[in-house]
Length: 119
Image 1 (tube, rainbow, N blue to C red):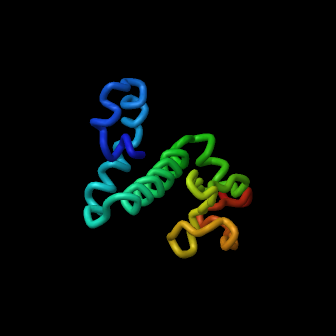
Image 2 (cartoon, rainbow, N blue to C red):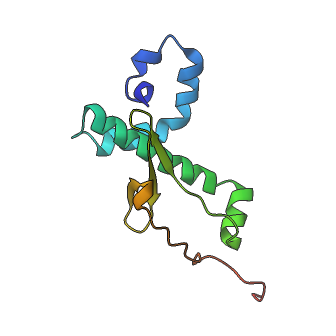
């Protein structure tokens, strides 16, 4: 994510630069919404936003989307903080990343879940 924030740092690494092109949506979200942050706080926001963007990307895949609708697949967004070994999970209930140990999931039936009785 540092390379996403500072593309000049990976300019000599074409494979990394190419890989980071998949995070262009994240770059735009961060640029437009997190201008007030810097340093570690900006890096954390970038990392977390990228997890959410990639979850949205997964939802667009037909095999994933159909299983989400059936309710037999649930997606989770996690961030591992290498420096401390902490794991954070996205809590959809409050729209925030929380430490895994404090996370109490509430799996809800999707509004879009269908039954076999629909015509």
